[in-house]
Length: 306
Image (cartoon, rainbow, N blue to C red):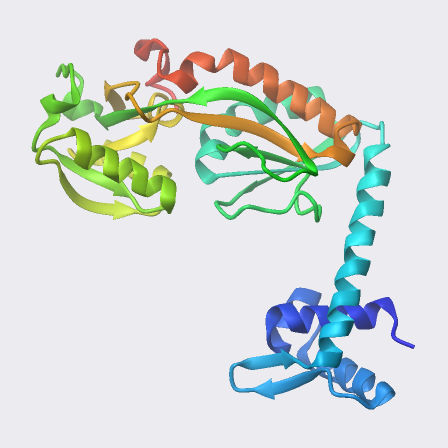
């Protein structure tokens, strides 16, 4: 009879497409995965994968086992969330996932004080632009610039994110710009981070005549430092640009760039004491940071510290 561990191995091979990658996911060596697959196939006298140059392709029998493994995995996640949701102790690990920019500009200023107030909690910040699964417990809380669409998730809008145009304080501190057209012909650093990034580039081309996009990076954090170190301009969320050392705002907030900031968790975890504590803390922090989000803060108070 196939054990749960056997199902895990088959599922890992299916997702990885090859033995070495599956071994890495399972934190075992390659020979262990290979022997386990051979054992299962010998036990049932049936082949679960076809071996091709492009990888391991599941046979019909393999697909049946993979489907069963996925159902078992989801049941395990459900039980885990249900038990975790009943936990009322302010101790243990708490994982929050967000983008690199939000982690650096928002969480980095508030998690230290939260940690001091809750010494029993170990907070793990996962700053990655890839969206992690709250359903599969890859994280407990997500801080996202979009409203959650999944029925199993609950979210709360905690802010409006506006954007601005920022440049080096050394180059632009004493210069005044009233409209985007005043920046005609200026050099810009573009953000190459996906659909939202393309929207910012489109905004530059649409609103600033003869704007010159001279280079780009996939990281807004990198763009902020590039602008601070040179004479080129870049679009940044006001939350980031207004607090970045060496930058000064030229125009903010920019019309037509408004976004939303959401705190999200799974329905099963909303009553967990650890999750509830961090959610409440960040809601309060976001309310205090409202002027920063919207680009309506006083420049002299927030552009000299990072």
